[in-house]
Image (cartoon, rainbow, N blue to C red; front, side, top):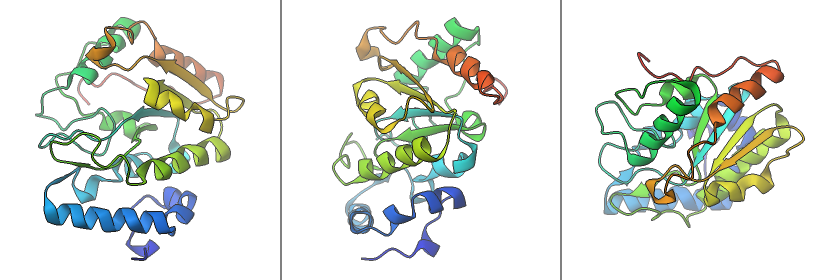
Length: 229
């Protein structure tokens, strides 16, 4: 199964940066597996949102990257943005902890929703290492080759851009540090915001540190406050 680039619905800058990935044999295999999985059961997120992170945050607009593992596997949760859920869906525990750290760091009250699209539109690439999942089965698509694709995205940003903040939360995300040139970008590391980390995420102050760095390289800060957004 070959891929026609004209059929790939992704922002133009990302399409150019990841062109070789889309045309590769492994990506054709991902497409074939997706088609088979959808025929056999439910897959999240919906096809139109698989590249949502890339489409909301164009390649030339990326200021920060927050890495997640794989999409939420519950109904109506996954929206193609790491840690984010649509409005009207209960805020998941990890995101609730992110909001708590945001309040401790910058005094921002937790919003009444879990939609992080506002961050994405400001240049925060909310990227999961794996871009699809079977309903009710976390990590079910983790060995499909998606990580090769998202590693290529991280590498392209590291190589072609400068002054990006990479926020690596947990061991899985921190394993991506080898893809990032620390002389061109800021790498921030912390425990995962999951309650399973027993609060080790708290006190990392990544939000204020990210904005301080962006200001130092002449970029506008991220408005992290999601209230009213």
